[in-house]
Amino acid sequence: MASIFTKIINGEIPCYKVAEDEHFIAFLDINPNAKGHTLCVPKQEINKIFEMEESHYLELMKFSHKVAQALERTVTCKRIGMAVVGLEVPHVHVHLIPINAMQDMTFQHKVSMESSEFEALAEAIQKEI
Ligand code: 5GP
Image (cartoon, rainbow, N blue to C red; front, side, top):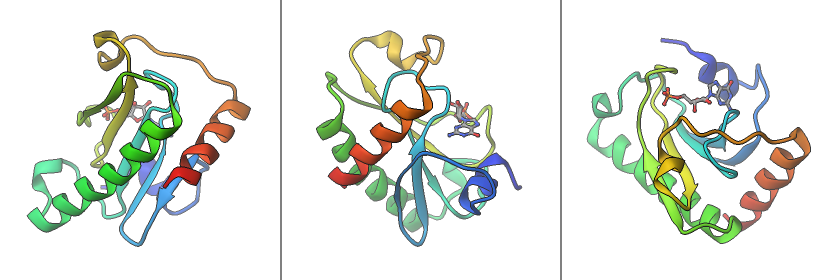
């Protein structure tokens, strides 16, 4: 099913892109739990992560691993948390969240960022990929 992420993948709406290859894209979450909160998304429209073919799922994990390492080199944090939810956008995505405390993983504590800050952060992470 097409969602807002299909529009981002097709370039119909903008995003702060962090990484992209033939099958996956990573961009900054627009309403981040913490600065650097990134979504890793397969280009194929699939609703639930465990509906993915095993090989495709493992490729998503490999892509997310690469992005998470770049993120950890860019953002000061204790570690990178990972979550899969999908209750808001029914298109598979892995949340990578630079965390310092458990509340950073709750999706209830949000940070606000200017567009210039999103841009600079996406560029800095891209350089670490
Ligand atoms: P979930 O579906 O895992 O519950 O959450 C979807 C996530 O996607 C949320 O963290 C939300 O902020 C993010 N999100 C929703 N719409 C957009 C969008 O148009 N652009 C970006 N970059 N993130 C979005």
